Length: 291
Image (cartoon, rainbow, N blue to C red; front, top):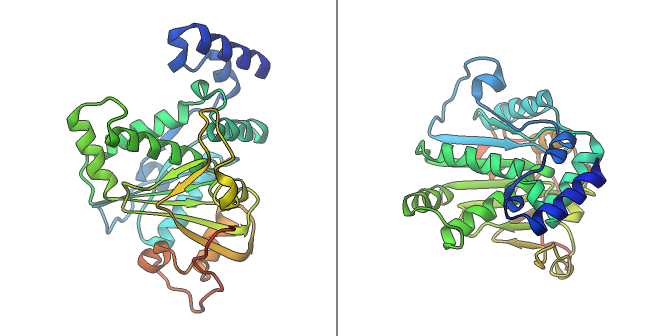
């Protein structure tokens, strides 16, 4: 099926004009799970207390995260930050296919047939932007950082005028981007540009093998890792939050729990939102990446 999907992709995007924007049915057989955007009642199983109704918090999950796992992360963040979190669930289709999808999203390989999550999240955010929130907070993990980085790139293109849209839509996106905070946890993204957002941070454990392929990739080498469009890896207008002595990639075990114990103490997630401040400061620091 993988060979058939790749062959169909090459043929359709090379010879068929309509193939450039379509996701062929063979890919749909492989990536059978459907993206879902869950509101508060769906995540928490009923009504939830929201002391900050003018804020919108959304979590975009990483690989190998089923629906219940994504909900659990949202519930943990609600307890930690005092804000209910909606779930933008990117389904898991097996560890092999999840990694394969990550590689395609990161490098642009066969990008015309892996646009499902990117388009879904972009459209969902555009609808949420119409509700006039004072603040929009995106928390993404692992594969979710790749998708989120690509969606932000799409919004940047709209604001820059390189992607067609109405003046009204462009003004709406520009206004909401100025109110947006983005937290990329264990980022494997290829392109991260926070030039229009209010705050963008990358939180990584120095020993996180996934982040080493993105956020923690040596700075001097990033421009040499080219995607299919010939663009090197880019991390612009991004605050680096690195735990130098920590390892692991799991969202809950290696990031959420350590944050509650004092990790990433320089992050705005901790300084502005963490409900219960840790008793002891950790050895974390905002540090420069490898030269």
